[in-house]
Amino acid sequence: MAQKPSIAKGTRDFSPSEVNKRNYIFDIVKKHFKTYGFQPIETPSFENSETLMGKYGDEGDRLIFKILNSGDYLRKVDDKTYESKDATAMTAKISEKALRYDLTVPFARYVVMHQNEIDFPFKRYQIQPVWRADRPQKGRFREFFQCDADVVGSDSLLQEVEFVQLYDAVFTELGLQGVNIKLNNRKILAGIAEVIGERDKLIDFTVALDKLDKIGIDGITKEMREKGISEKAIEAAAPLFSLSGSNLEQLAVLKDLLKDSEEGSKGVSELTFIIETIASLGLQTAKLTIDVTLARGLNYYTGAIFEVGAPEGVQMGSIGGGGRYDDLTGIFGMKNVSGVGISFGLDRIYLVLEELNLFPEAIDQSLEVLCVNFGEKEGLAALKLVSRLRKMGVKSDLYPSAAKMQKQMKYANNRNVPYVVLIGEEELENNTFVVKNMLIGDQKTYSLNSPEEFINEL
RNA sequence: GUGGUUGUAGCUCAGCUGGUUAGAGCGCUGGAUUGUGGUUCCAGAGGUCGCCGGUUCGAACCCGGUCUUCCACCCCA
Image (cartoon, rainbow, N blue to C red; front, side):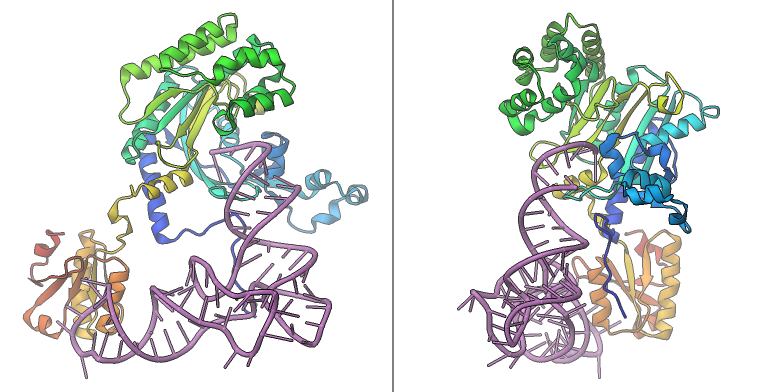
């Protein structure tokens, strides 16, 4: 019995037009990764469970897709574990592998395993799918691509500067003008927590602060109160909630606010270096702004934090992000290796380019020339022309059967083919072919002896 | 993981308080048009009403479960 086909929750098929558009983005991103000296790596789609488990927090462990062991795996479970019905204990017994959850942890594993063959600083890029057992929402899937570039083995702030330039280069070539590269520093957040006397509430404080543009000042002060942050501390931090002005003005305010915190002051000087260096180098189309409310990925970032916002007027959250993490490889026993990296949010960039109509027109042109098939002899002559066109790199095809003219023309029209070639009985006799321009509808005749006349006009 | 929401033709959606044979637009196929698509006209094909069960004389409609969609939270790209 035929079953109705379906697709797993949170997954997608990509049709030709979508693949073309996605590749267009990939190709531009890759091109700039390469010109900045990054090298590609790939890692397996699944890893040993112990490589992934415990690296993303409790929430992360829940969202990792586990792969069932092969064979008669239940036989190996002792009765006690089986009867306890404890999913965590049970999972450890019946699953030893799990699907990749992000690209950063596998990369850290890769660096540690290949440390003797890598020349540091090592700049790598990686574009591969990752999987999360999350509940899907718009723009959030259970299978999606991550597109990362990281540098390990250099603590120079010039790396941060390069990533800002890289973002600018990619978004400029994609035609996405006016993206906002937001910059913050974990040390500044830690310094703030320190000077307001809530050092041990750093995470709660910043998670609340991160929601400023979403729930407003009242919302975040309420959340901070609920998390047990003192009224005095909230008051002391209040100037941050309405921090405004130019980057240099904001830096001046922060410098003063954090003058008694060693860590905070370090953060301010790091941020100042990046801002000043970029100011002297210049950016093509992007804006670089300080945003002290930026707190993404705070669990592992230790220095700079990046987030890229879509241009004004586009209803879309962040389209990229990243930061510095001082101890990337420590979890796998390799100490003192600093890493810094960025990520491009492919799916969201796709949606933004679609909304602003920024994909090149020709992207949906899968065929430039289609020859109408009028029969055996005519078809053969057309196929000779097609071979010639293909050798010249022209995307061309012969309709495979001598179907009705109307059907063949309609096919060409639906496939967005700009030129239709007609070689019928009469043309065959005169050794010519007719080219119909599907856009304006006019026709021109060329000699089969010199098709380059037509090719040169393409 | 919590709360809510959605599902009817290939697509977008109508379908009254439960009542005969479930409709439209677009698309598709054929014809008007035997060498001309994109505009027009005519005709036709296409439906387990997400799935399973229940209530009822009778269910697309009511109830339960399940899957799916989307939304908020959590978290995140």
